[in-house]
Length: 344
Image 1 (spheres, rainbow, N blue to C red):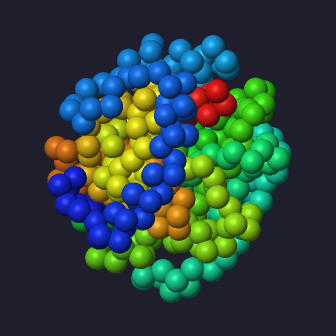
Image 2 (tube, helix red, strand yellow; image 1 turned 90 degrees about the vertical axis):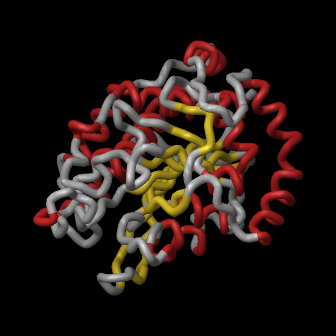
């Protein structure tokens, strides 16, 4: 993903029109859903949510999210090495992801395709999809990218710019949370449907070419795993593992899916979720939103960073040393809270 603009910039008028029409149809539903999570504040001033208030509804229904389990699943991905598309590590990790989801989901699909990269030509990809409760008509989409960047081009040492990124935070952390979530949901049988889409080739992009990012997601929205697929909304996880993470309301999420951003932040489970407007990011959620599915990006944004992200972003230091199980627990618990609110 790339950091695009500050929160003060605006998107095109026709996108605003789409947003207004879409959200008008959903506000009544959202009002009931958000009441189930309880109020943790919706102002755009900088404040943190109370974990005790935010998690109470979900904990009454199901077990608290296991951050240590998510941490172990994050580490298992890194044990394969950098998961750069086309490498043996990428192929082995794909097999492991498919097998792991099969242990938790009712149906698992591996979507293969070919995309055009900005610098490497055509590339084969694998999107790995786990479906929970396929008969349910009300569905929640959850996404994370599982590939890693071939070049540590933001590393302070230019000698490292041609080295691949391990991607413990940038990729594996979000996948680890979703794998752990699937495992817990298996034992607790949600009444809604949950679709976990692990997308490939997110991180092959160039800064001056927006369409070069999120290639696996762009392929998926053009070839959804279910014809006419329309979940209620989606949540993307990206870089959700740092000990000092700050999850502000990402700008494009607010513009395309503002009511669902309100819902997620009402259900937020800890101090890493900051109830303030953040910057804009070209990430997988942008292409999902453009396809007509409202999608919220939970991503670590840093207003005091020259890149807009954590210091490990696109460097060789994005390793397990940057990952904190407590942060993963807050993100996973937030997802459980959202699911519980939808069930109620």
